[in-house]
Image (tube, rainbow, N blue to C red; front, side, top):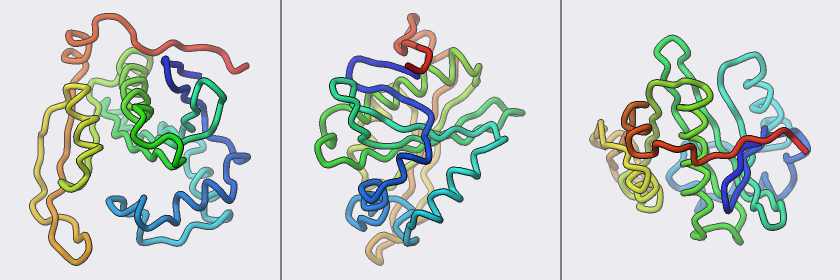
Length: 187
């Protein structure tokens, strides 16, 4: 478990594939900037997705609100172990958790873990230019805009730029010389 002041990150378990979780994935408005919007998600497809992380360097975490342990979202990390690069994805799905800083804290906890514990040399993330909330998270954690994929995504029928942000480990350790994530054994 990885803990911050607002949220905890845990390994995502099959028991979290509930009707509520599936409703997040199938919410076209919530997923409007995600490629997940093109799929219909079921219990079976979600179990298959969870299984795809087995025996891989990649990670699938659940985000829980600390105060009451409510499952509020998910995070993924896709890791290139040879290059030492991890790409993070995030979904804050629960309506009670949106725009409360949970996604921002979860992102920082994941970055801290990936740099300090997993030894990644770089962490990346990307989003549509229209996703101002995600861009604020990247900027909050001092990630740099590295690539603009001009017109790489069609959103509502309009070509939209995809922005890729990144940060290298030495920049993270300079900006955050002390760990921000607390690691604990599962309760």
